[in-house]
Each structure stands twice: as structure tokens, then as C-alpha cells.
Amino acid sequence: MPFALLHDLPRQLRRPSVRDLAWALLSPPLLSNPPCPQRHPLAGSLWADQPQRLADWLRALDDDDRPLRDWLAQLGSRRLGHYYERLWQFALSQAPGIELLAANVAIRDSGRTLGELDVVLRDRDGVHHLELAIKLYLGPEHAGQDPAAWLGPGCHDRLGSKLAHLARHQLPMSAGAHSREVLTRLGVERVQAHVWLGGYLFYPWPGQAQPPRGANPQHLRGRWVRRRDWTKAEGERWQPLQRHAWLAPARVEAHECWMVEQFAAWLHVLERQAPAQLLVRLEQEADGAWQEAERVFMVADDWPHLPDV
Image (cartoon, rainbow, N blue to C red; front, side, top):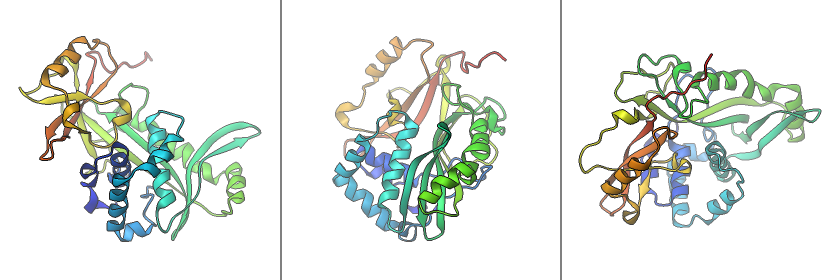
């Protein structure tokens, strides 16, 4: 992680998309020892040697974010993973010492799509195929070392399954014959495949889950709680985050911060079987804005909703 000294920078920025960009570049990966090679996408850039240059670039974007807004406006999908990839593509296209050769490269066989390569770039260490992923997983109420026990909030995804898919399908794809044809057209003969997996791990509240095997000791974390167990201290300010705002720690202007009564009213009408809701507790800063102090997934009382086997 070449930018450890900049870990607090996203909280110092004002514009949501610039905070998300800074968070994507600067937050630690979920795992220290994934089952496939991991490399920070900017490891071969001049920014990695001179982190202050990256900080200056992000602060300039925070003053005028039009280039980033224009870039993101071309994104057709509202999926969080696509937004995360798009943020990375913007940074990689601007990073000194990096040549972004291609992104979202479809690999096909006789018209059938086999998959795609998220990013192909050239830096001082060679040419790299990068798979980028943003994931939020909720841990089991006991144990937790098994990655298969960590579920996405909608129960459609497991950390163990994602890691297996990366190791067996996504990363090896750039070494296949159909990929080699595409890479040759890009002027690439040899490519190194790496993953970068960002996100948060949420621990049960109450509960005693251990981190999954290979977890980065510095990984970002939150808690999850069933609706029936929800409690909060008097006067705490909580509010839900929309899915597109799940990346960087939330910053809410004073006039947009919910009063305690507003959150209580929202919770009162929330359906008991509503999908998992990401809530943040906010604390006011000296400038009047409210900054995220912690994040919690609230889930239905019968979560997880797992299919019958």
C-alpha cells in the first residue's frame, strides 16, 4: 500500500465523487493474502514515489471537479462495481508514469462473450491485467475464518465464491488464446495479472466473528445488526446511505443532516423485510458539516435469506 500516509485525505475533501475517487485510490485492500496475486494499480506510477503529488491532484479536483463529472457522466450503469471501476479508470488515465492501454476489454469466442479484462495498463514494471472489485461482506455470528461464511448484504454473493472466481476464471483469462489475440492488437506480448479488492467487512453486533482467512489487519470495517437488536444512544445522529454513496465515508452538510426525529420516523415506516440498509452515525465537525463516525448494516430479523439446498 504505497499511500498509507494519505489515509485520512478522503475525509478532508468536500465533493462526493472526489471523496469516492480518493477513497478508491487510498483505502486498504480487504485481504493481505488473497488466493491470487494482488498489486496496487498505482504501484508503478510516479505518484507512488511522490504521494504528495497525488494529494495535490485530488485537492485540485476538489476545487474543480468538472473533468471527473464529465468522465462519470459517460457511465451508463448505476451499479456500484461499475462506478468503482470508472473511478479507477479516470485515475489511471491521469497518473504520471502509467499508460492505460484499454479498459473493459471483452473477450469473445465466435461471438460468445467469455468475460472481460477490467484494465490493461503499462508502467515501469511492464504490462498488467488488473481486475478491480469493490465488495461489502457481512460476517457470521460465530467463528468467521472461512471466507465462504461472509455474505453480501443481499445474500447473493460470498467472499469465498468471489475469490474462487477471481483465481480460477477472471485472472487466468488474460493468459488464454482468445485474450492473446486481443492483447496482440494492443501491442502487448506478455502481461502480468493482478487483483485489487477494496471494500468493507461488517461484523455482527452482537457477536464474536473473527476476520476471514487472509484478511488485511488494516481492512475497513463496520457492524451489522438485526432490526430487533437495533439500539442507539440518546442524541446520536443516524441516517441511511443510498447505494451509490457506499464508498467513501459520508460527509453531510448541516442542512442535509437528519434530526433524531426524522430518523425515528424513517425507521417506523421501514418494512420489516426491507433489504439491508446501510446506516451511518454522524458527528459534527468544526466547519459545521457532519462526518461519518461509523457504519452499520441493518438487516431483517430473519437475515440471512439463503436458498434451500
